[in-house]
Length: 315
Image 1 (cartoon, rainbow, N blue to C red):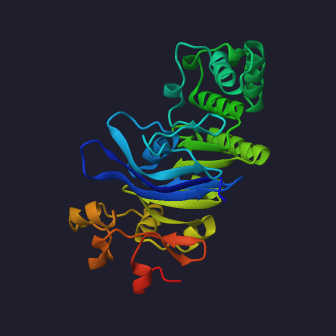
Image 2: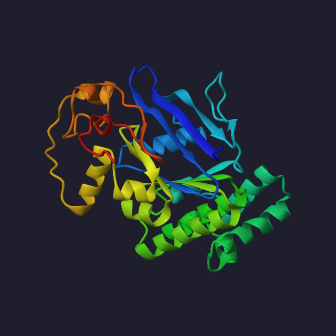
């Protein structure tokens, strides 16, 4: 049994027949970092918000299940996610916007501890200070009394990780946790997340568009495009033998400049069939149908009809 199981997750705009996320599914195991990768607008953040039950107004969950340690977190009647911070918590892209600008850092962390662990105010304050020290923040007492605007972006991100540590979650969702941070701070954030996994055995859903970060951090990878899972497998498998044309497209974009004048082959593929069909150089008639994830190699699945056709990506 996986720690986190997401299956058939479908999300769309209210009063629109089209889906933003279509049958998204993946698993996260205990002590594992699962990478969710794709270009901007591919639906990575939307998937994380749906899993957390934090979808913005006007966007509805239309189907799918989210299970934590075998227990379904989704209310079958309302479609709402019911979870606590010690089950799942999230580090957001912009830590400044995720922190309350009118409240001191220490009080924000202490409130999380009070709410989720039934701790007294004094115990929560002590635990909050310990959490700040644990993530390597110099001058933890000074930061404890500071407001978010008085801290750098990297320091605010450490505060968010300290808050996550204080919750002791089984699943940590890290959404672009190093965006706009310099390389040195990025490495420190990566180390903090890895330490959290080793110390607690929690699972991490690591969301990024950076293939270098995926290579450094992750055990397995799920590739997302247009709100649809293109491919999923081990880090080594996906990086050394990508099976889906979109995954190959991502690697090509790293190695060389990709011609932006991609021939568009019609929106019918993107709406009804493979979301990458209108850009894929290998597109053929079957791509007008929805391609389910198929096991091509053991532990390595692709949502593409090409491997079975023997054209590309066959082992």
